[in-house]
Image (tube, rainbow, N blue to C red; front, side, top):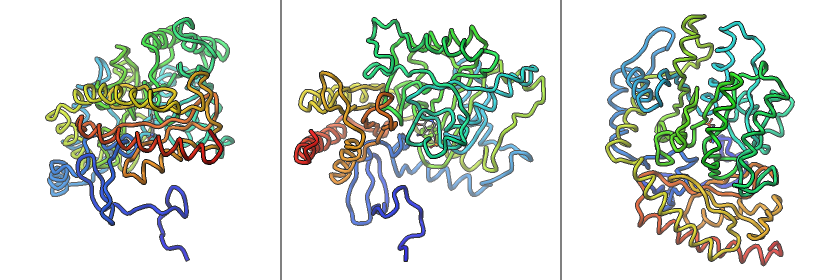
Length: 449
Ligand code: PMP
């Protein structure tokens, strides 16, 4: 007989039961404290147990929690859309609410295709993405993802979308070295477009900083301007998947602001609700919306829970909290501090090949040899080993392993809530230090290092 009816990520594993959370800490029912060093899945941006959010939930629930978007609108959804449009760059003024990051990127894909269809162009239906990418778990979003581990079982059901090399300088897929390479990975996009034919391609999608499949990989500074120019040249829309990076995580409201490049569509999720409710969004530019408005007038997507006032009120409270507490600024300042502390660990542990990231989205790549950058064989499961050592010691970090050597190595993400203080970062570093020491001993003992 099964003890639990809940399907968990790994069947048979023992998951501690969490009783409550406060700030950057979670507590299980046995009283053990965990530092949420990854904000869950880079989500709990304002920390746990924030009273103002609970109050906003209660206030909205007293009035109305659900209405159907085909019948009504609500103040909460209208205000949230307005706020997000204010944050977004110039002409990204329209917001479509969904319930997960996967739905946000998949909606972006559908909107891009629809934009061309409305103009009588029926052939532009492909989306180019990148190897070393993750855009979501539903079939459309997974089709756009280069995350091999998550794709492999379902390949026959996935669209055969083309993929460009990622700007993954530490293990360059083109075997080039920056800056001598001249950012060839950006030029590759043009080569792919020419070989397939621009008349087949609706959009290019990219994470500003690669997350789940690579571990906080930021591109060279000139990369996205080049990508934008190529997209414009061939009338291809540029979708920025800011599900992980958006809403202040990297020290800017949107990570694309680091390079002053404006996308046509932005996908948001995770930090938008900070995990207090399932909510995500697709932000669409006026250029696209004007075409749809002059045409069918219907964005052909939507979910039962889209734009529900309960979730919208929660997100509004989250964004207010972020503004009041200047969390975006804190992400920038403490993020720099975190990087310097991680670099100190790199001196101590040759296992650490690369330290990287933007704001409070930081990555550590583990390698067998820091000089040659030789990765561990993925069957060694170095990332999983480090994760469980950290977990034992009460520190949560996020695994970022795409599953194919050459496109992605062994990486973890450190991304505490944006409320984190320097003192708390020192605690994170202490536990990481001990954990890396234990990992080194374990690998040597097992004859793997
Ligand atoms: N895009 C990116 C960049 C992500 O990091 C994720 C989640 N890790 C998704 C899309 C999918 O979001 P969700 O899990 O909410 O469907």
